[in-house]
Image (tube, rainbow, N blue to C red; front, side, top):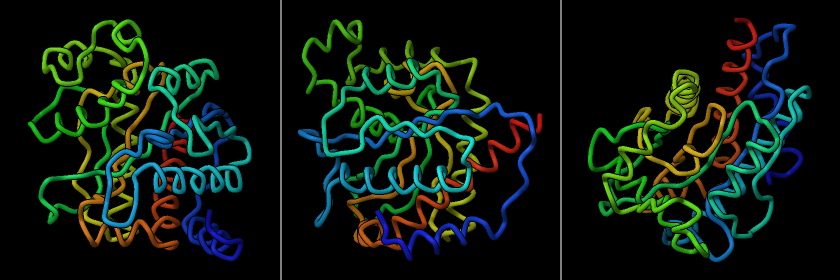
Length: 257
């Protein structure tokens, strides 16, 4: 978490362009899901692990929502460095009847020159790169016991599994795409980060949630510039602030309707 003075700075940063909230409250609960954890480190950089950066950004995002949107209940799938199964992350969101699901991750690529942010919703992969991201994130199920039974034979390495998976969450796709676009806009316009855009791919954690949801890849740990930024206090703070502002605008738009 950022220090108290840093939190005040980010709160001010978020309030600069704050909008009034509509009276009808429809976004009541948000589940924030820091990717990986415990025995699953996620992707690795030269100086950092995905699980640590995802958790730090998730906690800062939750703190901003609690501070600036007090009518919203924030629920985390994990608040410490523990391993949580993908099915359990979705179960938490469904049990709480959340209105929005935000999964936070860091990216990796064989080419260390690749840089920037990506936000995913559940859908059919448009290219091999999107499929590789989904395969990497879904491969965590191999760390789980009885994963074949839990996920009904889903194979993270089989393209056929992703075609079937894409049909889930169809009812929430428009809202998920809307929220994802707002996140990438904030990254590009407020942080001056390279936005690689909104993408669709087959993520198990999104398929099993019964509400709009996104998986945010906040940067590439395999890129020196991205990794250095995400390891800095200001980088984590501004990343959380960008996602918060997207959430604020999405909430305002939904409730206004």
